[in-house]
Amino acid sequence: MTALHDKPSKPSRHFTHALAAGLLASGVSFIPLQASAEVHVCTFPGSPSTALDQAVAREVFKTANVPATFVTHGIDEGDDDGVSLKELGRTLGHDCDVVAGFPRSSVADASGGKMLFSRAYLRSGYVSVEAPDAKPDGAAKTTVAAMYASPAQLIAVQQTGVSFDLENTSEQTVNAVASGHAQRAIVWYPAVVAFGLAHPQQRFTVAPTTSPYADWHLVFAFGPNGKALQKRVDAALATMSANGKLADLTRSWALPDAQATLIGPDVHATRNAYRDGPETPSLVHDIVMRTADNNTGHGGFIKVSTDAATDAPSFDRLQADHGKTLYASSCAKCHGGALQGVTAPALRGPAFAPAQNAHLTIGGIFGYMSTNMPADRPGKLKDQDYADIMAFLLYSNGYQPGSGKLTADGARSSATKLTAGPAH
Image (cartoon, rainbow, N blue to C red; front, side, top):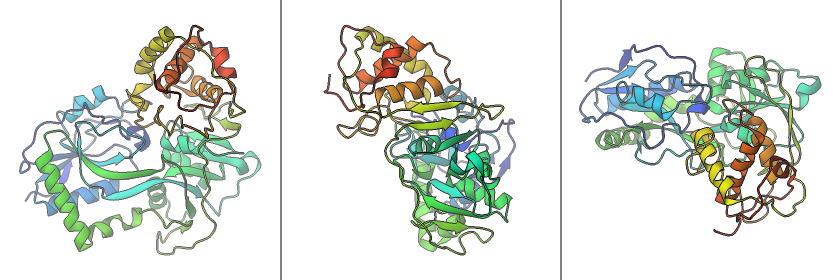
């Protein structure tokens, strides 16, 4: 048995966990492996859970009696909008046979397809974090921090009566709370643990969030030819679960109890229940959000409206078809080719357009989309292009095309609540 060890590879730029989630979509090809061959293990560069992922991988492959080697920086950073399938293909077919620390969600990724996955070794998710020792004042008292273009942002914008400080990394998001720049943060829980390990005297109070985008699991990911290896990894995880080794490895990274919990220098040694966690309704009433510029941290304000419903604006089929083309090039990377959600939420189905009791308006969606999307270059499209994408979204959710063309002004001013239309 060969011990798991580090193997240097090409350098990598910084990479944030949430932007990687689910981007290893179903078309990515891994090199074929025999289960007995040496396995090259990759993790996501910059992920807050890397230390855990590597520790679990070492024990898993030791238990499975599979020789394994870490490939350092085997997965490149990609751009500010995450890692594309093309970029992953350049490395996964050569350097990586398995990915440790692959984050999966039942509603927010589209990684099912041809890829294979192990059983989960950690249930994790997005939590609400405060720093009881911090003293936010002024606007910071009503500010919530979240990482830009991540599930944290999707959860944060569902809350009312607050402004939002959108940061570029999960570490910066936690630090916004620790430094008093925000009252609290919505953040992936391993980022809280990693921040605490780097700043052992920092104390946080942690509470659950209520959102379909909050719940995630960490697994091992394999290519379509990795079934034999997947079975051995699953068997090893089952053994480690039975003998307590998995619990020992993941204890400090496990989500707190359902009630809010104090996290400090003795992480998880004391579990003090206090107030319940903040509820996050399915969407918001008149959100005002401060968005950070990617370089300077300065930003403006965006308002998402959910006013009373009126008739849906008209659109025609040709512009819906054009919107589909624009969506494929500018939106599908995060929201999925079939609008099923990847790292960003699904844009069709009951989570987006419920049959009744909708909270989000067409104008609210359009205003948010045209100001904040695509995540790599917000507002880069023309107004009419955004309107065409909106027409495609309406059509995809059951709205029927008509003879009138949807304009940006018409979409922006629509107070119609988005509910699933009749099937077309």
